[in-house]
Image 1: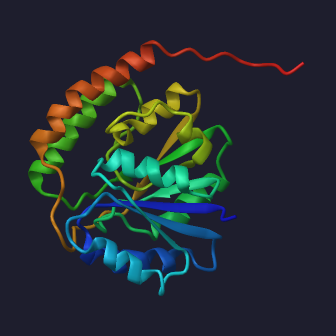
Image 2 (image 1 turned 135 degrees about the horizontal axis):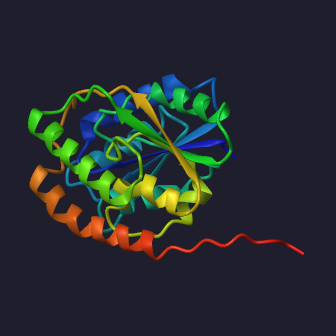
Length: 238
């Protein structure tokens, strides 16, 4: 069984697939026992055909496909449930996350206390438009004030976490934007790690500032309610 599963959700990302797979393989081959799990969220282009053909070049690759478009959080959960690794690394499928940062996160994990179960990427030099950076700054500030998660960048796609911890979290659409708060709610610790960030090489973004804001208001209220209603109890085996 692999130690690490790299989970990548994609929707209409045909031109980014092989370059990103090549970078993942270059970053991890010979350094970790790993698999790559791509989840195609019912792409309308030939993403699935490109993924299927890529399996001949990348034996570590597994391909899953949704039969109905379900969104990024569901695609991530699909890949994580199917993953065989004890630890999960996630990447956005647009190539803006740098797979070379995965060994950095693994090294950070190996030298950190076992209570830290999530290593969250922190895009200290974002390569996005000015409007997107401005919107993210305000969203991070509002979220941090409300949830007290002490995480500067929850929207970064590159993360490393223990699979069993993730599967124990409450599931809802867009939950991937609130992983630090949810992991802390479960009683574990989170560490933010500066990572590289790149401009999108091909394709178009699936989000805009307006739709992020509209769903974000409802999600923030829901996560705040979950935190208020949480209860953890120590257990002794007799």
